[in-house]
Image (cartoon, rainbow, N blue to C red; front, side, top):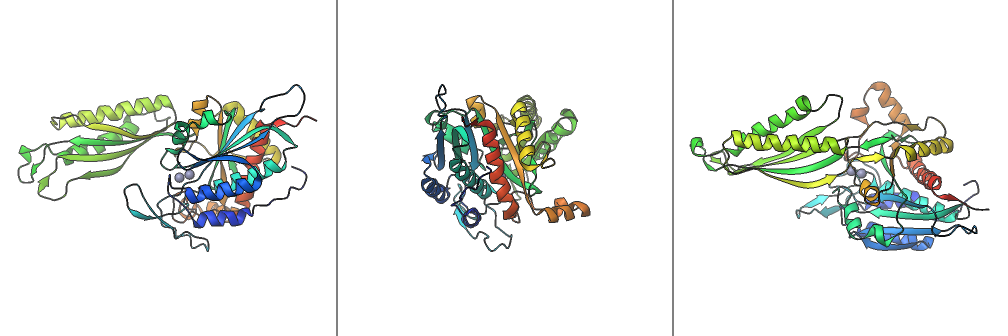
Length: 422
Ligand SMILES: [Zn+2]
Ligand SMILES: [Zn+2]
């Protein structure tokens, strides 16, 4: 990467354009169109409509060295494309005023509040750089522009659509996420980087009746209240204090009127854990408590527990992460890479690696003005003053965030691709 490479994409303009035109999960058609237009201009082969709105691009650059054949190391680079139903309040001149229709049919504001516009822009920038430097590396780069990460459904939709069979199979899957760290900083850790997560809907079945005659009913409101309280004891009383777990009841619905005891109550749970073993244990405890509280209430029908989505833990391969950290240090200088700890958020990127049985490395990179971050750190106000992903105020500074995002992908890809035979 020493020689000057002519860049044709105005990445900052592209980022502003994507930011201004966010699209909800599985509706990323304009975004996919922008991506495929740039891929065409770069002369990169691609297919669209993978997993509904996904795009997959392939750069084949086999070594010409005699004795070597095939496609060389195959490296997958993944960027997610979708935005969120959040009303943007950043005040930026490229802020979104877009609206969309959510799956329930509601007209909602839409914002790139998780930074996936930055991910798409950085990946296109990296592809441009890789295409311009094919005389320096060998192998195959597969760029996966994935829909619907925010539903935890996009990677599985692409897999169901045959992404692992229709394109060169990965030997490693790489991805990155912009986050509220100082711009320039890269955060990555070996092992569990992000939690596994399940979303459950629990329907508690009682027997409705008149509010004046509770003895003739089985009150699902009381059942729900007891269940919510007892679920809190999983983390406080049953999980080893040295382990991490989250049990959140994010939604509770029952009844329509004060003098009617309803027939059922619905709870929506968000559960998080660092690995598959912890997942099995916590799910078991949730089921035990939900059933036992229904029984304690005298329910005549067992509660119904439905899993709405499951996200595996995002586990960074130990050897590949160690290699990558050395590569980042060499490229960006010591002190650039930090261990951000495990995040209790979840990602669906690891389905690609899990399904293919190959290593994954997923890192975070900073998007906050380093001066603002240092000031907030000194004042002890980072939590209050630095907007996080999904906030209506989430606004990565375009530079040096974008430049570092492109460089990180190129450095990472080159680390796992082959060298060019002389
Ligand atoms: Zn998000
Ligand atoms: Zn995200």
